[in-house]
Length: 346
Ligand code: NAD
Ligand code: ZN
Ligand code: ZN
Image (cartoon, rainbow, N blue to C red; front, side, top):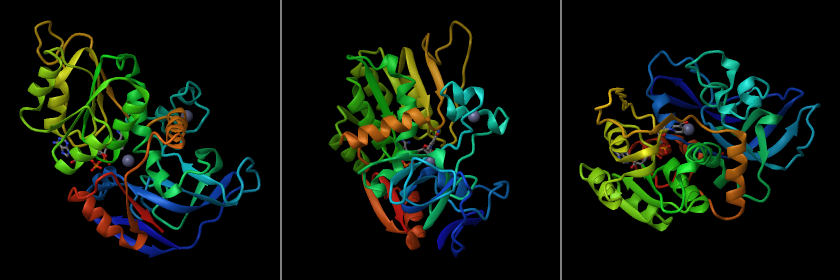
């Protein structure tokens, strides 16, 4: 079968590899689509320190059950499934408490839980082996369009769920970066809250999509954006701010517009940094702001995302590429030419 491998810094390769065997608790998934996340670009440009060279990339996968291991029940050949992005153990204290995106199994404060495509072989291939318990059935959803839900849907859902107490009618939510994650985050806000939604991006095509998806206000991401958001809220600020970019200008924008007791959610990994000052005279943050460095989401978030998609209230704007044209897709993402999500189709 064909698989896209990260073979070294800045280097992807399409390789012909054997179809993997399934263990007793595993499933062979025939991949329908594999989403291309901006995190794949971050990893592509890492240096020799990346520990997983040689593995198949792609952490947003969906497809059909092809074969099940001897001990697997509840899944049958042909079932359409979404592959969880976080392979949590399901047993540790964090998992049992429903915080499986903070699974303890890797045993370190700063290590993220096992993530296929950013560790074990991922979804940019014709087939992928997955533990049965990491699969959720998606019924009649098209698995090509569903694939990005695993991360670009689940990650914003998690960030939004953690800020839900602030997203009351009359509140203002800001979505910074209307890319793969942001265009789904915006729809989740629209479908599950009555907040006024302000979408911010540098690119007019992304802002046009934001408007189409129901943003109440769209703003160019520039030096005036903070003032405009403060003007919209009579100087009070936004109750929840979701930074799906994470470069210094967006971290600064998010910090500059968050309201007292607001939710500040940093999701993007663009290299910006955030500082905190504890003195009473600080002008960095209003009192009561709640900051979260949000990572992925839980299985509960995933089921909610699937439910919204099945209700027709959440849909991925898909740009399709044959698997063999992976390089063109990566180049297009890097150049900002993807509106919505690029999905590779084996
Ligand atoms: P994307 O490339 O699809 O979208 C990025 C969007 O940000 C684009 O619309 C782009 O025009 C916009 N943008 C760029 N610079 C901007 C600026 N200065 N101001 C406003 N908008 C700007 O990326 P994506 O796949 O949606 O990922 C977004 C970020 O989230 C990446 O850094 C990715 O690595 C990260 N990510 C984090 C998690 C997590 O768990 N924390 C999960 C998935 C992705
Ligand atoms: Zn991702
Ligand atoms: Zn665990």
